[in-house]
Length: 241
Image 1 (spheres, rainbow, N blue to C red):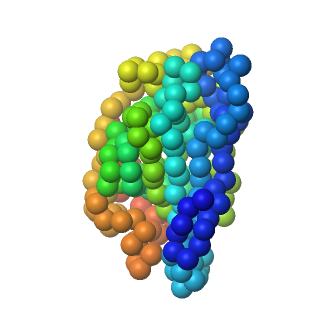
Image 2: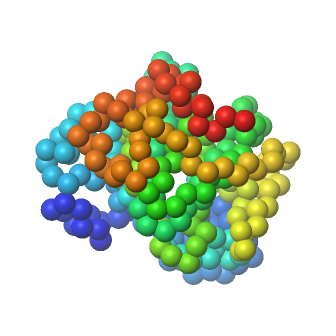
């Protein structure tokens, strides 16, 4: 249960039984007992006025909590998914995260046809903002011994697409103990993993250390989450080769 404003919010729980489909250590997964893997607190608002504004702007504010546990030889992580494209737009919905507690590794992968053309690992700490650009699938990893708590803003109303991550049994890379990275052979030939720091998002009106939730007072700054085609040059600058 999460206390947010005047509400006690129950999480949507992603169980280990679901996660078994995307784990590197299939032998460990075959005998592991089901338990919570991570917790998603969705559609949050501090008060009724904020909720009305957020809904009017077709946005959603969430908090995700990933406990510091090992999934066999792999660090704790999310299932992984892609976003669809808004109607009549060429790019998929982006998303923006902020690390509230702990440390996060964001594994980003771009697909063109059946081929992965880019793979990125963004290392983020408390206060960092991390952009998920259009057309990138993503997995969040907790590589530390502390709880990872992160917030995000995203356009509301679309369904995430988990199919590629399930069919390939994970993301394009697995992060194992001691922060070793192993390519997922089910993807075939894959690009070398690029290791990056969080990009500056000042051009999008996002400042490091400033609470993401505080944007509830200026939600127009998050228009790029709903209309990515209008901001493609800025969005694609974040992780340019």
